[in-house]
Amino acid sequence: MARRWTNDLSRGDATPKQCYLNRRQLIAAGSSGLALSAWPAAAQTDALEPNSFEEITTYNNFYEFGTGKTDPKENAGQLTTSPWAVEINGMVDKPGTYAFDDIMAQMDIEERIYRLRCVEAWSMVIPWQGFELADLLALAGPNPEARFVEFQTLMRPEEMPGQEYPILDWPYIEGLRMDEAMHPLTIMATGLYDEPIPNQNGAPMRLVVPWKYGFKSIKSIVRITLTDDQPSTTWNKAGPSEYGFYANVNPTVDHPRWSQATERRVGGGLFSKRIDTLMFNGYDEVAPLYEGMDLEAQF
Ligand SMILES: Nc1nc2c(c(=O)[nH]1)N[C@H]1C(S)=C(S)[C@@H](COP(=O)(O)O)O[C@H]1N2
Ligand SMILES: [Mo]
Image (cartoon, rainbow, N blue to C red; front, side):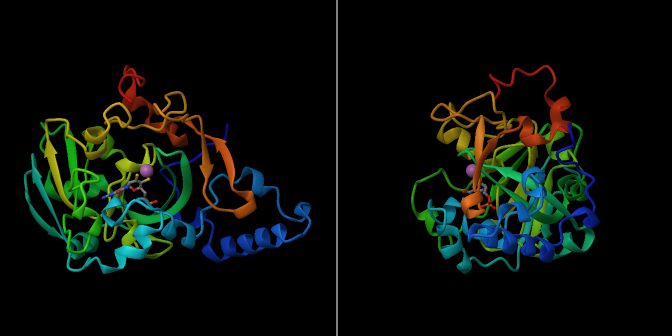
């Protein structure tokens, strides 16, 4: 089997945006009557053709701005994202407040085109720009006894209208085991299609853990805590039987209310399709992190 995706994708491998847009026009032409045989076989095999900027920024989950898919796009414009800082504390040598601009000045920004698989069984392919979380944690100097990392989203009900309602236990909290956090596939995304990441996608910086269900990829982060206790996380508290701490994408472990065997790839109009969900969302290289674990019990 071909490698689905790797952590060593260089900028040169990515589909250029313009080329991609041309493909979209072709597909649009196809749906209005052009012979389908006229367009390339890549349409069947290119599982990592990115979704459009429009799709990625108008179909979102960001409950701080409402629970509808278009609410974040409509309501997130009012969020003030500059200045921004993230507090890094807990089991680190250099706890403190790290200004977003200072972080960016020290990080190597690279592109990662990743699948994003929501626990609700839809998915997209997103061209992120960002840096490895490990590089950010290194600034603060993790202590050897740190076993987990806890992340917190901004709490600002004046600008995040969803926080006025007890939909979730605000602020939104997520967590990773230390080895998951240090894995080179785990990034902080700060850009999308070579633009600063839009507010609805988690400006100015959000986690992306591509082998886990999307709810682990917490947005608009203001605090990172290294700890030896497994963090108590928002969705796990809201529904412990439905949203596990690990939340690894796994087609063989169903959500109590729906199958996780397949997913709907967002976009493409007529060509929107149901595809098989892959173990670890196709990122097989993380499998060693879970050796010896019962992934049905620790879902
Ligand atoms: N703070 C916060 N982060 C969040 C969410 C949220 O509601 N609040 N939703 C999560 C869910 S369920 C998903 S699928 C992804 C969606 O990311 P996207 O809108 O950029 O595609 O963000 C995740 N991060
Ligand atoms: Mo999600």
